[in-house]
Amino acid sequence: MTTKHIDVRRWRVTSSKPFRSVVAAVDAAVGHPNMRTFSAEIAAAKTAGDLEAVVQRALGKSGFMEFARFDLGLVLKKELGEQAPDSLHLVIGNPLIMKEMVKHVPDAGSYAPVTLLIDERPDGVHLSYDSMASLLAPYGNPDALKVARELDSKVERLLAEAAS
Picture 1 (tube, one colour):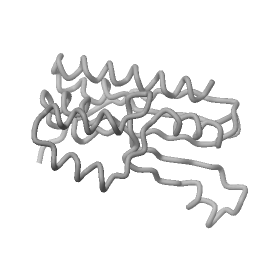
Picture 2 (cartoon, one colour):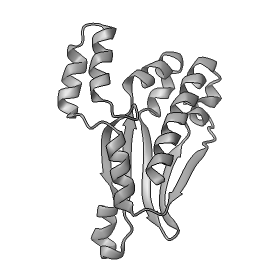
Picture 3 (cartoon, helix red, strand yellow):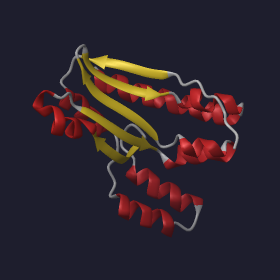
């Protein structure tokens, strides 16, 4: 077994908006395809062009789609009651961007699609994201890093817009 040490850069913005407003802003910016239908359409795609058309239909205005959501706040509320903070873990991405990174660094598939954490704290609603460029930096592939930096910029823009 081999190991690789990876230093991760976490990007975070804090919003004074209510939790539900922040989540609604993210929801409005990302696509929400029926994942069963989406997977079937991806499998049925015959060409790269067909694949791109399927993905483009699934994306929201941010260029991302939601793959999964985990309502951590709901779980916390089972033990802590209504005073528990809201917390939501979203898995979002764009399969076309993921493909470009994985072509150059197969391990990028461990980090994509990306995860966002939206959670309530005493100082506001935090939107957090671990930089893909920081995750891929140890692999030293300039092509993958270029794609990762572009992805980071898109995610950072999404979170900044949702927070404001």
